[in-house]
Length: 119
Image (cartoon, rainbow, N blue to C red; front, top):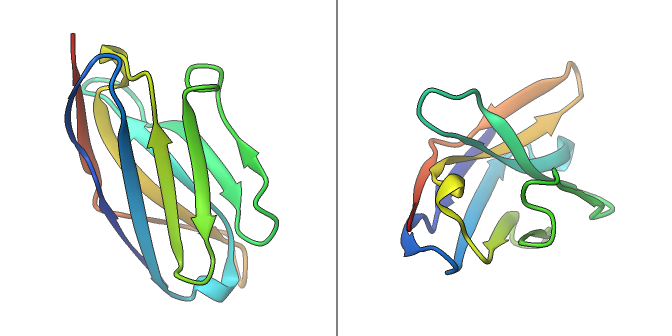
């Protein structure tokens, strides 16, 4: 199993910045990708950013591209999400995700951290 603990959420004004962090433990050697998802009230969980654990290749949806940056520190087993130019529509609970594929594809989730952007 992989255990994930997020930190860094909070309240920020529109245009501001926040940095989320996720500490991973357990079977981190089997992790293929890590990422951040978010879920706003009444909406489905959506992807925010992903990064491959070994190569560091990143991907973002258009809604956050150019504003959010995901990074990883493999030595410390941590993933970060730098969020700039935040908008009220970025308000959501943000979840850290780790995906392993051995022996079977499995997703692990953190407990979530609230991000609130005021207008």
